[in-house]
Image (tube, helix red, strand yellow):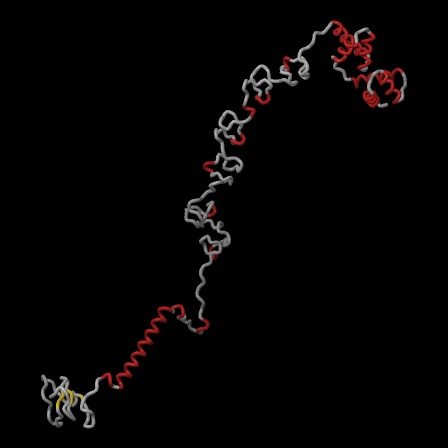
Length: 350
């Protein structure tokens, strides 16, 4: 027994030691109670083999096995990478009766054209995000159709209804883009309120300083409740002015007895027969009234001189026949103007 073979025929036992060659009928020594023999050992070498045993890594079969093992490991690593990184390239299972080239395409993703959260195939109005009653894009609990800004969860109603730049909660007139302030709260916009800080006054008609029922802007005497009108602007109220349309005078002059008589006589003449204005003045002068008194008296009369011309023309026709122009000339001779004479003839129908 030796740690190393001592010559040809030495063999390696299971106890790791070398034994000398023995005849076939001689039993090997008992090494720890184990049967050693040609079947339990390994012949180290024949007579022509070298006297020392080669390490395993120097055997040709070791390197073949090593190379095969490396190839297997590389193959396994490559398959693992493909499975991990290229799962999208794995072919889908082929249904029976179909070829790999006829594999079904993957299901398309749902389409929501109007972005209202409802797929087109379930949306009756796929192009109108506000048409689906139950849609609530901003999740504020208000449906899109009722939400002023369906994309802002903090806004549900129009914050500025009339678009005038003033929020509704600060706009006294939220539906009027031209009005927003009412300082005195009288319901009239400051722009239309004559006195925006006085709730009792909105327009000029509300200002009546003397309380006579006539607004100050229409009252010629805004501080005097007894008077309000002065037509001729002479500072005398119409009710106190004898000549309310004549700013040069306001009081009636003293009427003389001669003027009173001239006026009475003029009225009597007109009751008797028609006259022209100048003809009546001449008639009064013929009665020896002065020209001033006669003129004053005729000016006090309220007479339509056109109608006086018509009446005078009819009288002439009752007395004698006239041509149209002849009657016009006769009326002008009586003191009527050409316009008054022509008017009369037209009315008579001559």
